[in-house]
Length: 397
Image (cartoon, rainbow, N blue to C red):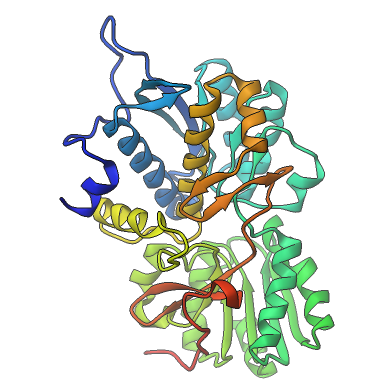
């Protein structure tokens, strides 16, 4: 039996997740709605998240359906393209709730879209587990219908990144930040944390989304000759950073690129030049303490022909695991679901997850590094390492 069959269970043929209307007498499907960035700037990142949702739906249907408080029902995904526009995402979620009358929701891609839909969730008291987003903004508005399994909350993330840099002997750092909420929040906490750790900030500039050329920025960073370069970036400008950092031979031994390197297309695009780049991430299939992690990695790789995103795809899968376990206990009643998600400890590919308010209270902040062979390894904190940190020693031409 191959890895994918083992992951799906004993069923020999998976039932399609997007099903035709049931025949008379058939069990009604559980309709699960979402928007996704299928086009626009965020589309490359959204692909993997949607793949994870489809894989989960296939697995559930192959096992006989979703356990809804003791009754198995097939899953049907209802997906709209939000075109990478947070305003469209909010309108779509309102449509899903009021017109499509879906039973459950899965989350969109990225912090801006998550922020946009919070008001809709609160207005209709419709619970949804988040995925590829984290922000103090969500925490500050005291939302009751959204939860974030990520541990990449900016205040903790900034402090832990500074501690990691200090542990690696970093004395000077350059910070380059895209003008989007999540990266700016990280910077707000990273700068004072780095200074507290005795790290001098020798460059600290922001740039607008849609930047086409970082030559000037990187020339200034190269002149400053920092021990660490911190690129608080989104996927499109992360690509630009890696291309032009190689061209300009940025030789800082500690290089952090926030969002993008964890996706499979970065490995395909940059190959060995991605080696020893540090990035956001708190999951790795190589963590033996999480027995579900490697089977998921192998099943996703077998189905899609590439590794899953170590950040967003793993978070999307965790959100499905949480939803599945909550529905098994609470059914589809929104009040019961809300209470169950808020109070239960869930078994996931990222280990146990439980919430304090909107935030995951069990998973610590971690950082990944892609090392030889394209393996995503946890390099911080030390007690959860799957491999030790390696310095960035150069670029291949």
